[in-house]
Length: 146
Image (cartoon, rainbow, N blue to C red):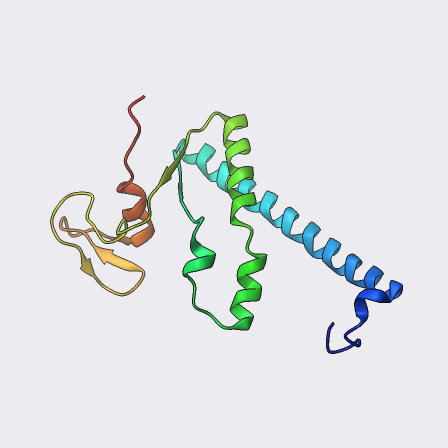
């Protein structure tokens, strides 16, 4: 947009209206996708009668070291809104939501012993079972005493 219009685009009413329309459309698309994702998570939790475990991603924007394209995508990633929608949809369905610290959660074995890394995504547990690191991370969460 800044390439298409002169640097004084803020003072041209038509350009401001076009920009407002674009960002309103983008905001609606993001809100709709957040509802879709949270609805899918709640559906999976209802199907398996599972606990919903979320990582704390509040510092992810400050820890990234990407280029300008990645920064734009990172700005559009609305993890707080997804987390909020997952919370209220889990509350409606009666599922507990747990937040865990993500540090080393996918690198330690829930059974004790040493993990054998096959590649970035898959690990072999000490019992010989091959599983995803996401499953290992969700098993390592500390449950509250309720």
